[in-house]
Length: 471
Image (cartoon, rainbow, N blue to C red; front, side, top):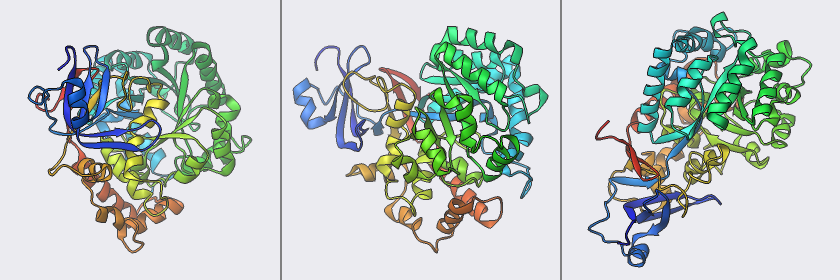
């Protein structure tokens, strides 16, 4: 072997920046002593060319693929993942989202004001995301500048973190320190640069003056923003008919106040009018698509083909704690399920691209992560895969990563299947409570259980940063 080279060998999935997925049942990923990729491809082709010795190159225990990235997740909600909507009743006033925030989410976020608690939560969050093969993304912290600093200090560089803005329809203990906001943002931006995201919680909890102040600070310090948009019908009605009747649409609130000009990551975007899609498409905004969360809260299904036709960047994200798991494999599986009866573009290959290539572009990490190409980081994850080795990329993703069969996927296209019919009603009008939501929740939780703890090893720039055997 050429001096300074190192390699790992095994079945290798490579989502491509230009679209599609390369797959080598017997592949090899070669890196240099600086933690950069030298070559990727079939073992039989690269081994002779690079002088690779079969006895010296370790074999992977499973599938090799790029590390995963999650562009929408809530750190302080990690302790209540899977319990986001606990004890809110069958049909709470204002919908499941607003009731869950008040009952469970806001108290969890309030506890992060204490530095010791914040450090503990961030440490658990980091360990759990790494165990899921997730090495970075865009996260929400809280309104507390100190807690946001703790998160930015403890999380590695691929993570961006949001200081949250809120000043209404939330507890007094979770309101932004508006007199100190400019100083807080300046200090965090000075120390962490664009890893800091100015975070407008959502139009329900942020008024126009605070939002415009956040926009001005983002522009001053060269930062981007993130928020939630059009998640539930009750929320949309509250924003458009009660809080901002003069803005036209929910998206119009953000356009009018300047947020859409700050490269925002917009979470959910389910109940979109055509003019809202057009407004977003005209900016550098991107969408965080969260099928698990959108299912469990009965919110609906993002109009995938409409978003894609408009050319809006989007990626799959977990939205923990509304999701019970940090596993993006669970998100990929739910993506395939909820779009099975409505979109021919929701394929296993596309699902993989939406947790690797797509979020890397959204987060400004495409020069380092997202795919395997010479010059990028020699970073990868190994995912335990049942034998025999899958023969095609589709089988490697569907069976190897997601533990699904073609028959499993086909079931979601059958109108008489209980889950498929429940998804159809979820897509049409959302689900507040009842049998359909219970059926979908049971399926999601079973999927999460099946797909957790699949990652054996995580390597970043040549260094092992997580190993299941030592966890």
